[in-house]
Length: 316
Image 1 (cartoon, rainbow, N blue to C red):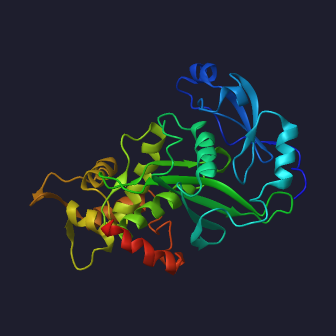
Image 2 (image 1 turned 180 degrees about the vertical axis):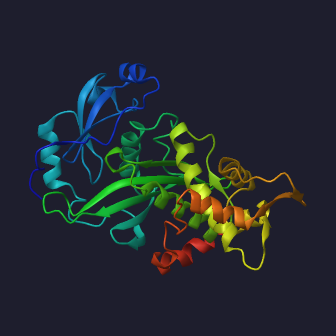
């Protein structure tokens, strides 16, 4: 690959409005150039001060392996020889439905890649601090195929991480769609894959708590659609309980209740340990709010060999 095309400014990202002045003062990197796209950061990261400095205006980051430089010349030199540029992303393909694919990466096997990915992600995450203890996590990259002849044919646009062994049955530790690709519904794909992991591992779970403000907003939208779809998918019953819904969609009962409260659907009547829910109310809610109840992830597009191995993790 030749040198990147001229740097383009991304208008799709912005520092969160709450405390923006404080955040700007605290950030050690003000802007990043990911490949050829320039956009502002939101939070400080743990980049080594001797390599990045205390107040860097631009940090150049390889869009394939996330190696970084505060100077453009070393960045351009690296881009020309990056060992990922002509190869598959690290890890293994587990899901593909055009134009997106998901790769699973073992942090133990790809320490440098996942450390650099985590350092980059911290620029947009406020409440995550473990970035060099990558060995106990798996990482799931969301990759978009790009038809343009100017940009690389593939672009990593987001990811989530998951503990290999979570005593709380967390199916997701950290999630991020990179700012230039936000507001396109891509977070729902990552969330959908995390719940597919729960299903394959035979563990009802959810994301690590507490959620950030942005994370909570994203999950509420995802949970609401998932819960409504689950309620309507239970056949031959006019009412269902929260526990039945939780089992149907592999969600924690507490998360189901949070979603139902947000939807205004939580009944006061109870049946056993769960609240009683009317299917017609779920149908009306979906229609009034114009909710797409189709799952964001197509189960038939997971790689069969991966599904066979993931099922064995339930006994780990």
